[in-house]
Image (cartoon, rainbow, N blue to C red; front, side, top):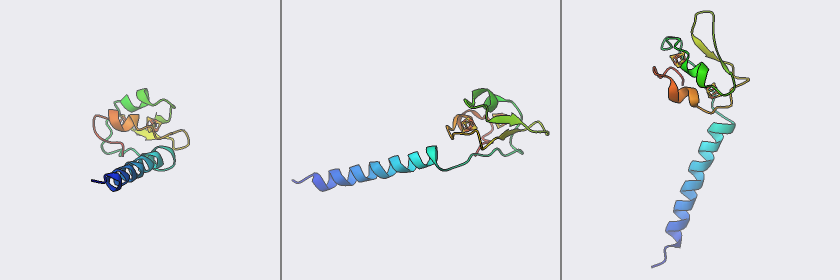
Length: 84
Ligand code: SF4
Ligand code: SF4
């Protein structure tokens, strides 16, 4: 049985997934913080490698898009799922 078509299909699928991931990491998606869900715990500020998150005047976290490199650490650590 010739398995090459299946192999190429799987490789193509993996390539598409890889490209989608790379696009989000390096070119695309900006992250934002939903202030109504943020409790100001500061976990995202502590974990951000680029000092891209700060408290706004309301005591809620906010992302400086000029510093953010889309690593998604803040998304993963937020206990309230406030980063999207
Ligand atoms: S980790 Fe979540 S709840 Fe805590 S300050 Fe950051 S956005 Fe707000
Ligand atoms: S995605 Fe990464 S660099 Fe951007 S604000 Fe969150 S922790 Fe900081």
